[in-house]
Length: 95
Image 1: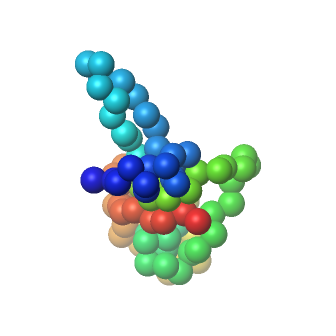
Image 2: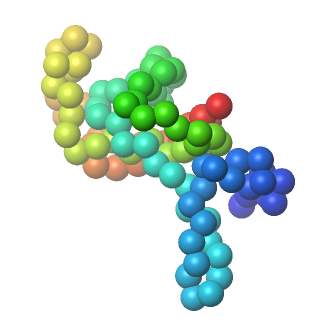
């Protein structure tokens, strides 16, 4: 559970919603194609470039999208289907 101080420092990394009159917190997820999602989780891919800038900081879920990047599998010399798709694969701290 996040502390109030943590939420104040990192409030841009959360979505605040109301459910039955109570405020709930949802973390954000970044959808990344495999095998890049696995590389992020292993720590071999440290930078993810996007078209739009983000001010999101704090804990972010990594979601392995259902559409893999087949050319990247060939470069890694790994068979497609080696890594899971369509699931959350972990969390990272975005600084």
